Length: 87
Image 1 (cartoon, rainbow, N blue to C red):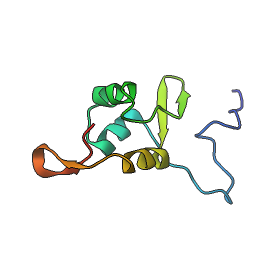
Image 2: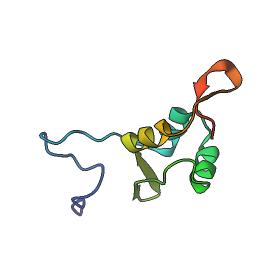
Image 3: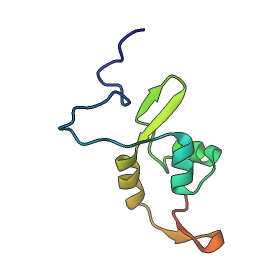
């Protein structure tokens, strides 16, 4: 078994450093209220940030960066009456 690279996002960090939360595409889809395919389409159109890391075939987004990106986008009321960001 080979050692994980030091910059691998899933490698445990020092207890003195703040923890970073990562989202998979499935988690990101739920978080922004879109389907997986809509997440990929929004990412291609520049309406969502690109994934920060790729580990094998898994894409990961830093939750703080997604929040920062979404806070710059306007919110609208959509079907179902829930407040979600339309992309």
